[in-house]
Image (cartoon, rainbow, N blue to C red; front, side, top):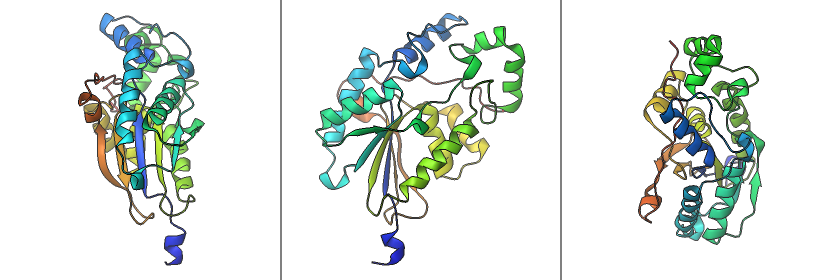
Length: 253
């Protein structure tokens, strides 16, 4: 074995979006009603899974149980947000994997600052200057006061990926996180441009409890997308597949 291979890192990365949350449900209801404020039951970090989200996490766990022993992750790391942690813990327990779920704050959802709990209509009504700035800059670079841009999130994810290179050869890692985080992992891992990742975001909703897989058999070099946004494990078990997307107007004006 060469020195380069001995120093190689992870060979597989499994990205999971959390199951449907009460916040997802509240946001979708607010958008349909055309109201300004989303009636979320708790601060963003504390929002729990909906009953459907819990079913999705159980179905995910049953699907993970079917992974061959040699293909199972060596580590499971979750966003510290409750909805992601619940998804990870339910899925791992159901799968029968003997793994502890660790958390990493760098996997948290994008922070919205003063726009937290507002629909797009609410932003336009209450903060028209911010709405205009968002239209001008586009979703990738727009940072709401007190919040983060997508570029900010990408910076913290780059540090997560760099640590995967220090794990040692052969490791497989499962990360349980959020829709924007998964899209930005794609941006980084595939070397996308701003336009390319925004095109994906505009045309694709990352489904709740979906699975996205990247592989690199040698443990070094570029990652290859094996599957994206797969939710067959839900529909095959008769569990509802839910689609809760963010604002589709993502490109700069």
